[in-house]
Image: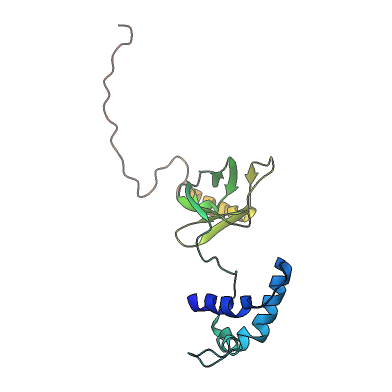
Amino acid sequence: MKRTVLYVKNNFFQRKHEPTLYALNHDIRIWLDHTANQKKNQTTNETPVQRLQHEQKFLRSWGIKSLFPTSHWEMREVSRDYFISYLGKKYSVPFRYAGQKVKVKVTLDHQIEMYDEQECIAQHPILTSKTKVYVKQEHYEGMQEIEKEQELTNPPGLAAKNSVQVPTPMVETRSLAS
């Protein structure tokens, strides 16, 4: 890096330039295209333009994925009615996550995402208006079938097949008059 700075200082800045930023940017672009990027590198024996063409296929696209974490993560417990609360607003989560803890992430494009251990289970735009609740109907799909199945296997008023009877503890009774 030091050699690059010295090269620009000793080559480009030895010339006369207009004292405006616009003119300086224009002059350096011309100098780069006609001088610096046409000079062969002593190590690779290629010009920067040739080297870029060779390495272009190995470079990843810029700006697709952040270079560092840009999100804030929090843990939230999903309520019995299948919502998590974030900044005073409620967002629906698939019903099977009721009572479980999920990770919540706010993205740069103003979305809130909920994750189980690995996968994104819900995504909503962050509510900024007076609206307090955001519901996606697909989070409730399949819930009725499961409830019906549970009613058939455990009819109301009857103990479940595998339930264990816990003895009721004896409690002392006495008069409240004294």
